[in-house]
Image 1: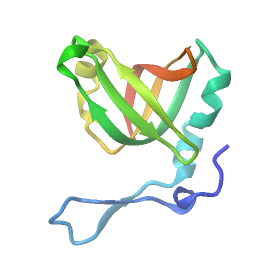
Image 2 (image 1 turned 45 degrees about the horizontal axis):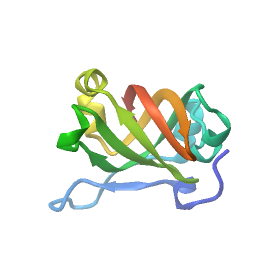
Image 3 (image 1 turned 90 degrees about the horizontal axis):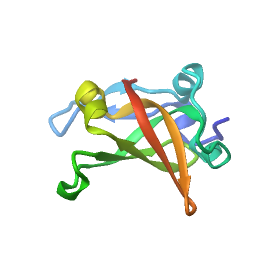
Image 4 (image 1 turned 30 degrees about the vertical axis):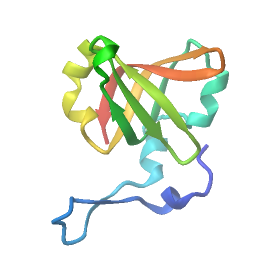
Length: 124
């Protein structure tokens, strides 16, 4: 369950520097209706398939990562690293370059670090 947070009412996304104002509202209820779990629940779900959603805050594709991309995904409760293999990245490129997404994947937990290995990336 998502706590009271600025996202609880709505999140406004600007349409770039030339924008004359907000273009969209993304209410937290959209994530709930999509059946996502809050990121702070993932520590209890090792090796389980999950859906999480939120704002992509740190997309990275380091040259040393052998065609793997990494996304920092933030919801109203926490942030998680999402690992995106090359074939998933190619298939869902448009969604990965959007602001808000729903990730379907598997929770990985090793040495206290929690990641989600993405299987699908859906644009909200």
